Image 1: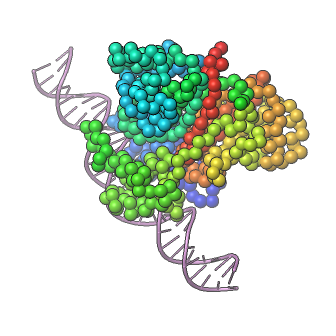
Image 2: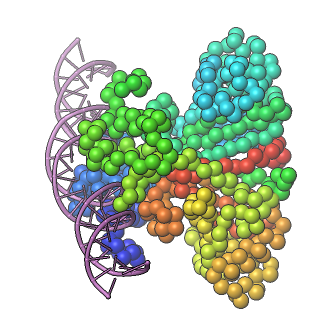
Image 3: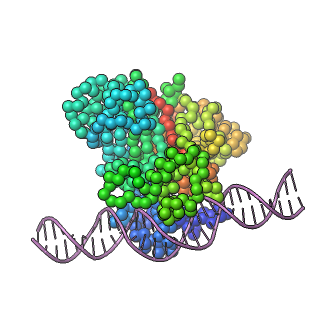
Length: 247
Length: 247
DNA sequence: GGGCCGGATTGGTCTTGACCAAGTGGGCCG
DNA sequence: CGGCCCACTTGGTCAAGACCAATCCGGCCC
């Protein structure tokens, strides 16, 4: 074991294993290459399969590996940089971004969202569902909550259905004069529904992005987005001038 | 089990357990309260300890629980909102933020950082180490890489040492005319050194924030920050006018 | 009183062994 | 030939049990 051992206590096997595997991935494997199966790897390193899996799990969390039941463990490509501002000076749904609108329904928003919508509570709220693609695979899901009262021209919406209706809501939203956005990022685990769309198991780690879209009257809409934590690196396009924000 | 069961396949025990525990946390436990130990919980639910631990691990990942060896499992408080822009129109180290400078050394930056420093490669680079506190506990660590060539007045730095020297570097940096920042956020696992400072085990999930500080000449500095993913919710203060960024 | 020490408690690591579920691919059957 | 089906491979879930390491706390010793 040629790794650093500055600690006074022995390093757990799985952590040492993780280091060894990590170095092997850098030097001996190509992206997309398939590793030996877990039983063989465990035997090769002389550890129990559970111990090996502990190391593999962390490597997968770091985006180094990709595992699929029935297929195997493969070396993952570097994380894709995903800009949470897909299009400059845009509301969601502007042409050119990678979002794909899937549907729209009229529902009661989650309690947490309802609170931030503030002034618009009470009236109907549209929930627009979208999926974001990158390199041919789904990397994020989003539910955008839009109170009908917060945007004009919402009366004709009922004439359309499904994805078309979602796009109509976004179109109306884009007409608003915007006052900026407020974002938060935290770690979460994918709900069953999101996991399915992201081709992951429920509970998979995701980066949860909460966005408040601000308009003259207050919060015009709230978006809840979940990005695959294993494959995504969220970027926040350069926003010049923190100084511009001085109050 | 009153939970939704729309899937056709049976739900794994640990996931069901997670749901049950999650609901119990909401209704039957107070923040800071200590749960029964793992062996008793496992017995109570009629599962192996490993299965119970799988549920607890996910709940800890979501910031619902906090576990400490030799102490027990406690109900975690809601995540703290941490603004990655601690002070408006500021370089790091401005008065009033929650960062605490711990030391400064002259080192070769990691390869990834060296690349982005671009024009300033070759000369000496200072690494300033800081820790960010919130509610009395360390929630983030940071290493700020500052090429001596990128800031003026760096000649007198050598007269100071340790934290004082770090503050001196930050002071000089603050004098620069700034051109904005570029950020990226991704999931990572804490290196041994960071884990120690964050009072976590190595490998603990962290949100890794990479910040490029831009100045007239290019990248003036690069910061690598790691935030405890279980306790932090990163906020990006409202930046008005995505429209201001239009090129 | 103050500090050391040692046992009890708790989560962390590790093993062995078993079965399940999702894909893959080859071979049989129409 | 084309499509269905089943055996097989692979990761996912689960069990029962053992020992380790960090912490706490009470009692002993100075």
